[in-house]
Length: 433
Image 1 (cartoon, rainbow, N blue to C red):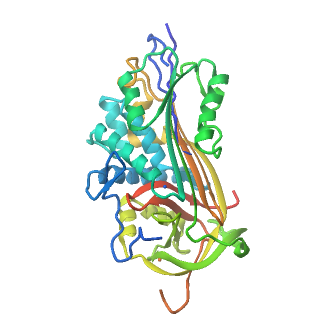
Image 2: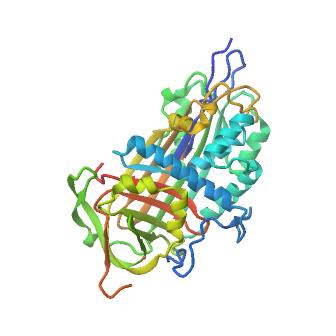
Image 3: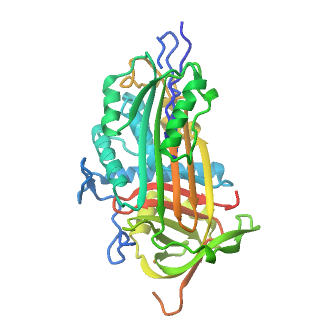
C-alpha cells in the first residue's frame, strides 16, 4: 500500500508557491506593472475595463469583478499577515497569489472549488470567464509601457510517469501560458535545482530559489508556480546628491538614522484626517504608480491598517487628488520576504484544500491535497526606480511645497491604474531590517 503523497503547488516573484501538499490517499497509486492615470478632474477608474484576449481594452464591466476580487483578497490577506508579523517589513503580491490559486482552482471541484473561490472573492463566477480574463490581463499588463518591465510566468511541474488530466494541463498552458514539464520528485537533489533555476531565470535572479530539497517530501507529485518580475525607472528620478541621512522614527518611538532620498516636484497628492498619500509614477506613460500612504503621526500604522479595506481603498483612490509641489523624502529600502500561507488560508476557510477531503479530480483522477503554500518576494526602491519580484507556489499652493517625509512606518502599493490591478503591497516599519 502506497504512503500518503502530497502534491506541491508553487506560485509567485512575488513568488507564491503553492507547494503541493496535494497528497494521494493511502491505498492509491503514486501521483505525482505621467500621472495622467490619476486624472484630477475625473475619478480614477478602478477596474471598470474589459480586457479582451488580444489585449485590447474596452470600457465595459466584464473584467471589473475579477480585478475587484483580487483587491479584496489581497487586502484581506495582507491584514491577516500584518496581525501576525507587524514587527517585520511585509511585501506580498496579490496578483501572483491570485494567478497561482486560480490556476489551481480550475482543477478543483465541489466544496474544494467553492472554498478556494470564497477566499479569492470569486464565488459564483464562472471559472472559464476568470481564466480568460486573467489570461488577457497578463498579456495587457506586460505590454503597458516600453519603459516598465513587467514579466509574468507560470509553470506546472509534475511527477514523471504519473497520471494528470490533459484538460487541466491544456487549460493552464492556453490560458496562463504555463510551462508544463515532467520531473522526478523522487530525486529532490536534482528536482529542486531545476525548479529553482526556472524561478531564478523568471525573476532575473532576484529570487534565486523557492524550494529547498528537504521540502520535497516522499509523496510530492506536483508543483504549480507563478512568478512576477517588475522593474521601472521613476518618471521623476531622485538625485543621489540629494540623498542624506535622516532620522526614521520606529513604531516604538526609537529613532534610527537612515538614508532618505529627497526631491521637490509636482506629484498627485491626497490628504485626509488619517494620512498623507502620494502617487509616484513609473515609466513613460505613468499608468503604473507607487502609492504611498503615510499615516499621520498621531494615527500610526496600526490604526491606518484597521481602516484599510477594499471599500476605503476604492474611495480613497476616487477622492480628490490634486497635482501640487511636494517636498518628498523617501527611504531607500530593500525587502526580502517569505511566508508560508497554509495556516492563514485555513483560517480564511480554505482548510478543505489542505485536507484529504480536497477534490482536485480535474487535475488528476487520484485524490490529493495541498501540503504547503509559499510566497516569496523581493523589492528594492532607490534613486533610479523600483525593482520587485514575487513567487507564489499571488497630489498647488503659493505657500510652498507640502512636506511628506516618510520617516516613520508606512504602507505602500504598486497599482496598474487603468485596470485597477493591485500588483504588490507592503509595509515598511524599519528600513534597516
